[in-house]
Amino acid sequence: MLYYPKIPDSRNCPDGKCIAFEKYDGTNLHWDWARDFGWHAFGTRRDVFNLTAAGIGEFQVKHQHLSECTAVFDRDWASDLERVFLDRPQYQNVREIKVFMKFLGANSFAGLHRHEDPKELRLFDVWLEEFGFISPFQFVDDFQHLSIARVVYRGKLTGQFTEDVRSGKYQVDEGVICKGGTGGQDLWMAKIKTNAYSAKLKIAFADRREDYWE
Image 1 (tube, helix red, strand yellow):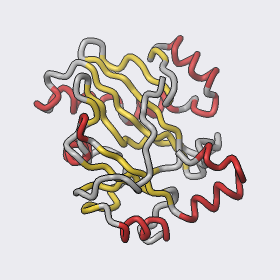
Image 2 (cartoon, rainbow, N blue to C red):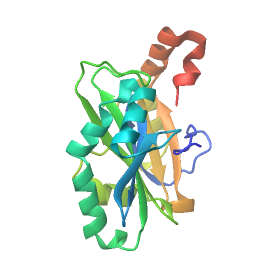
Image 3 (cartoon, rainbow, N blue to C red):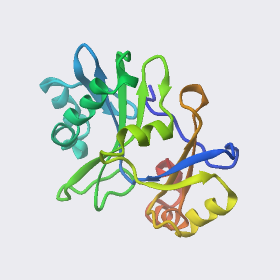
């Protein structure tokens, strides 16, 4: 199962108002919260584990390079996110919520991490049961007091903006994710990668670079 969708490039996306967030070179993780149980599950983009001692142990065996993520989440995120879900009226009737984060360190590259680097989690999306992903505008309003993905740009997604990202004008390493719409079925997303990151992948992985492009 794919817990987070693949994001298309910008060729066929709408030209309406959007927010562009920095796309970090790290590992996509999800954390699952229920109003009745609190934080109860987590995993990568393609798997899920119980957020228990046994589940964490299973995760660490399968994903040794991600073994620090549960400690980082518990230390930096669990209580602050739950406070938003419990205190803000827009979440009062939502029973199940998933948050999506990038796990990374200073030298993370193509989803690989150096053990000696301090790690962090960056929040980049929130999914609500029976609705789907919230809009980028609500996301910024509700979570900007936390360590969310950096907002790079607000406005229309134009060809000029796309070229400026690719050429390095916005000083992002990997690229950006543009998001627009009102959330749920109306949400759209598009990725733009920098030319420098593409060249870096080509050097590291040659013909396999598309495997690491997402």
